[in-house]
Structures are given as C-alpha cells and as structure tokens.
Image (spheres, rainbow, N blue to C red):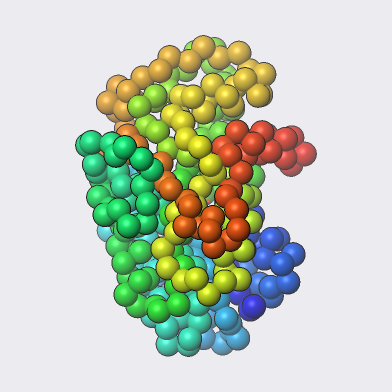
Length: 292
Ligand SMILES: NC(=O)c1ccc[n+]([C@@H]2O[C@H](COP(=O)([O-])OP(=O)(O)OC[C@H]3O[C@@H](n4cnc5c(N)ncnc54)[C@H](OP(=O)(O)O)[C@@H]3O)[C@@H](O)[C@H]2O)c1
C-alpha cells in the first residue's frame, strides 16, 4: 500500500516507519514541519498530490495537564485534525488509521469489574480526553473505511531523541539516577505499552479490511508504582518508592483509576495478543542500551 504517515517523528510514528517499509509498504513520512493537521487547506495541499491508499495519523497533542489550560489547542489537534484527515480520506477513497487513548474511560468514579471493551460507553474526564474522544467520533462520522485504535501509556525509543513529551520509563530512569527516594502514584491501573509492539500490531491490522474501533495494549495490567518498581529493578537502580494516591500527586488533569483495555477484538483479527507488559519493558530497556 502507499501510506502517508503523519506524526512520523513521534514515538509511535518512529516505530511504525521501519515496520511499514519492512512489510513492503511505500511510505511517505510526514513530520510536523511537513504538515499541519489543524489546517484543512494545508492538509489538502500536502496530501492531494500523493497517490495514496492509506493515511495513518500518529500525530497528537499529548500534554494532558497543559490541555486543561489550553483546551482549544488540544481540540484543534486531537479533534479537528482527525476531522480534516477523515474528510479528505473519504473524498479520495483512502483508508484512515487513527490512534486514540484509554483516557476516554477516565471519568468513571466506580471502576468496572473487568477491562473496558470497545462497546463500553466512554466517559472522558478532562480536556485531553474529551478532545481525543471527539477525534474518534469525527473519524467514524466522516470516513467509512477507518481504523480507530485506543492504546495506553506509550513508551518508545524516539523519546530518547526528544520526541513528544517523553515517556514514563525515561522519566523514571532520569529521576532514579538523581534521587534515592520517589513518590509514585499507586491507584491508577492500566497497561503501559511499547510503541514497538503496538506498531507491529498496527501493521498487521491495516492489512485487513476489518475496519472499526479497537483496543490495543500490551497484555496484563499494573499501577504506575508497580511499573516504576520494575523499571528500577531491571535497570539496577536502588530507589526507595513511596506509593501515593492520585490526589496526593496533585496533577492538574483528571486521571483514570482504571483504564485497562480489553484487546481481544484486535487479537482475533490479527491472530494473537501483544506481548505482556513485562516482556515489553524488558525488550525496551535492552534496545535503549543499544540506542544510546
Ligand atoms: N504517549 C502516550 O502515553 C499515549 C497514550 C495513549 C494514546 N496515545 C496516542 O498515541 C498516538 C501516538 O502518541 P505518541 O506518544 O507517539 O505521540 P508523540 O511522540 O507526542 O508524537 C506526536 C507527533 O505529532 C506531531 N504533531 C503534533 N501536533 C501536530 C500537528 N498539529 N500537525 C502535525 N503533526 C503534529 C508532533 O510533532 P511536534 O512534537 O514537532 O509538535 C509529534 O511528532 C497519539 O494519538 C496519542 O494521543 C499516546
């Protein structure tokens, strides 16, 4: 397929690019400097001349706390951007793959008994989450042949060269080298996911015609505090961790207490689950040693 990859220098985009090419796709990588998704005219100017089969939108505004202060900016990138892409894709008959987030389930004060499925009703709990959910709705409304994939807590090697907002693993490694004690939130359960594994799954998904909404994370679940402990254990850093609550941490934006996603729908389409979170973390730490 001929693919336009938007957000090509982000964490996910950077892992998608080589995998798409290895799978035989002809990829045009588009960085923020190449395309402004909030500007419908620019989107058309950049994409119209390209002979495409698929547009992948891995671009987003991911600054969850800052989004509370600038909701219009988050909405422009996360909702109007995908709307611009979806309209153009539909006009050309191109497919669209768009990425969304577990935070669409953030607003529920009562955690569910089991991981969220695609048929659960979202309840976004902040400006970032609202903007991402709006983006999903625009894609579904404007483009028939779409894949919308929700994922969680991404970490990819591109963060090492400054992509996006960084990631939790890199933040922990940096703090763990400087401090002997850390306080980490222990009442948010989810599934941090390696962009390398997500990219592998997405490459398999786009080769199908099974359009629609999917959840895609590494397998298993844990709290950020449990994840941090494992990061330090594997990295052989001695850090004393104090578990704290979300309220004690005091971030500006609301965070979900339970945003574990059920990825079985995706598993049935691509033929297997993503690796479990521990295997993913171990693989990431090993690859970053070679990367740096
Ligand atoms: N990161 C997470 O923990 C997480 C969790 C759940 C879901 N997701 C979703 O997964 C997807 C990939 O996330 P990621 O972590 O790979 O993101 P990322 O590393 O922050 O990369 C996003 C890319 O989008 C570009 N971009 C931002 N605004 C743009 C615009 N208006 N027009 C064109 N490009 C723009 C950024 O360029 P500049 O940096 O130059 O602006 C950046 O290269 C996103 O949809 C995100 O919402 C992420």
